[in-house]
Length: 441
Image 1 (cartoon, rainbow, N blue to C red):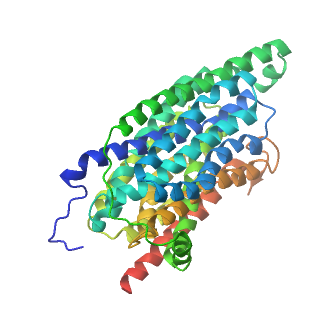
Image 2: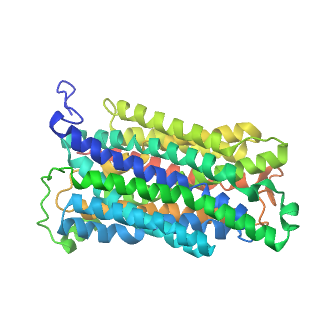
Image 3: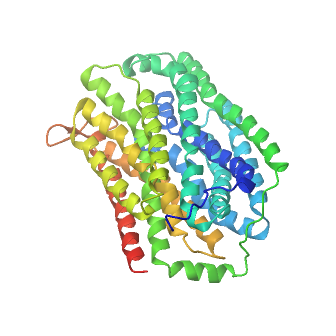
């Protein structure tokens, strides 16, 4: 990109559709971070669940991306980006409204199905919105444009976190009892508490379903411009071309590692804080630190987008990957508040990863971009699998978070953050390999 030539990230002609599509990024951010604390919430409401069983909340939520991303790509190839957005919003709303019967029947598996349907809708939205944003302008500013749009995702995430804390976590009656006191309650008392708490969990999702329907009605009457992409290439040829693209294949793995790291850090910070409170006698609120992490995430994304005007995206990705791995190691080895602050700091480095990997992996693609986009959305399954691996570390010594210690002072919960360290190091390596490829062009 010539430094003398000033290319706008978004032209005036495409500004309104850009804003409309960007609003979807905030919408799925709400769902993501409203759901992250639900692992801890369901564990409190249903104490019979193990850490691995409660982590199935994330598995159900993020597996929907893997299941539906490829069908979504085929759908938008057959119809249009706008049709994909509308169908995605419909599935999103249906999944949210399914929380009502799930709460009535008080069945954990029904909640998992509801979350899965929501993310089937989100798979349509992400498979559609990400490549559409890349196409709404000059391809030389595509990665910057996607980072700009993705910068509004943390706004939705912050909203989801606040809703989870104010309307769910702080209102759970099951959290008012110690384990001993809770187990001493009568069956009628336990049933009343469970009914109350599951109803509390469902209300934000029902409200979110109404919001989604409102936004869908706006999208229906909004003109979405057609892109220059023409689906001349067959699906089989698209797949064949993608499988020979080393940068794309590594990008899918890097995306899985990136999303897995995000979900691990933003889910298990609640367990990390619970353990600190138990060990030190503190009474700190995990949501406050999770909100701080999301503010840093948002700040990092804005800064990263600005930095990419002068530094190539792969190089920025490499530095952020290394920084995230080091911060993760800090969360493992540092005790007390220093470890918690290291955990919060990881979010700065994760900030630019998802859109940057997306832009690098799809760089210079033609007809295969929609199928390629589906592969990168399917990689979000990392958010389903990695939390289960982290939960398995937590269950090594029992259901607690400090049943075993490494080197005599590192509890299980701290040790489990070695997984984000490995994942983020791989993301940094992916950035490094693309710096090398640029120098060889």
